[in-house]
Image (cartoon, rainbow, N blue to C red):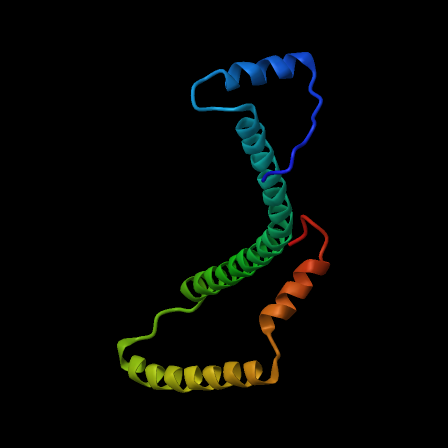
Length: 140
């Protein structure tokens, strides 16, 4: 047996409940139970939203840092490429083979330095980020 409850409603709300209950197949108890269930479910959803909001805020900040770091990386690469194309002249055909060999050796050395820095936990990107964070806004 279901427990009995005594509720007090204002006249306008009571009249609306009477109108709804007058429809075939419905009752005041079913309408009030459904409404209360829906209201309580929304309360639980609100608590879940609150818990998820903290995590979503944390993820948003993390994604913003990733985006900022990516912009720094792309800007650095673009500046390097522009520097290479505008400052370094093309080599004569006779010197290109020797330059490629030297370039390959320098690239291998570069890769070794990157691997060593990662193994030691030193990140140039962190140093760049720290420098950018210290500079006042609007200063290049």
